[in-house]
Length: 136
Image 1 (tube, rainbow, N blue to C red):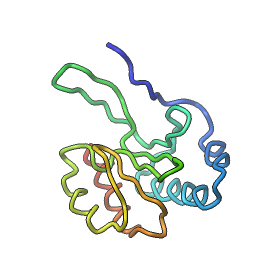
Image 2: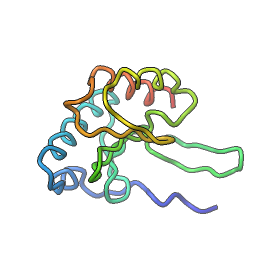
Image 3: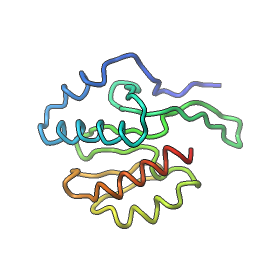
Image 4: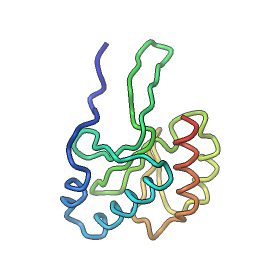
């Protein structure tokens, strides 16, 4: 079976965050790093070249495909900050309701996209991170 393309690395999370050119996005990444560390109690790990992940979750689909992924994580992209693991699992139904209270965002099947931390309710985000981390 083929392994996931994005794997945990030993690369420096601090170096990744320092390399973010946009000052506002870099500041948001530093805040997210601290916030998620406090909520999860985990040390961050760089997955691939640009995803900061916390915790590890083994999954197995009905098809037999299985692998490992971070429980929660984020990446700074040009268009938005992408948050991983907050909406993608059925056991996170509470997060779907909480997302309605979060503030301006969009989402895909498993990712939540925000433009800036100043636009959202960080208390709600903390609850979503805690739910995802502890239910998966």
